[in-house]
Amino acid sequence: MMFPGNRNQQHAAACIFFELKWAKRIVPNLAHIEKRYDISRRILQRARAKLSRLGLIEHVSYLNNRYGGQYGWRLSTRFERTLVQLGMKCADYRNRATGSKEKESLLLDFTGARRRIPLSRKLHIPEQEQDGGEAF
Image (cartoon, rainbow, N blue to C red; front, side, top):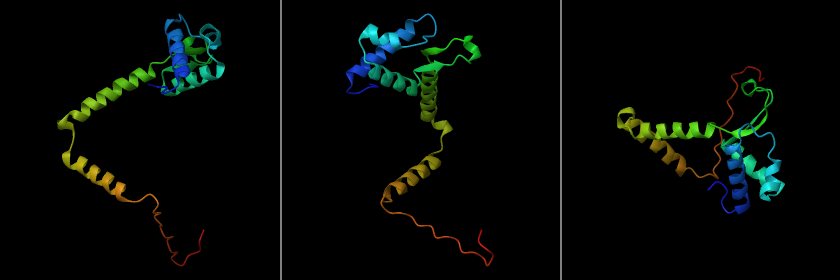
């Protein structure tokens, strides 16, 4: 799902995820995954970067006091919290008591108007004329 069409990255992402899941502490280096699961360094780095951008894993600095000077990679709770918040937003959106039909129909009109404007048409805003004073 996160790596469509690239089975090597899918495998690498699964290896990273499960290694971090079952680690007893923060993993300082993911290089051992290369040898253990026969994954190239480039594939591992690309999968790690994508997992990090998605918020599934995060890098902890040794300057972070919360972890007592440990550094490395760990599973993140950011992605989980974001999905929970998204679910709550969807539930709130379905609630008719919190919405305004007039406001939402106005937003639909705005998006429809924007859709009708061709992208190739450049809107020119003429410069304002000076009122006799010097231009800055």
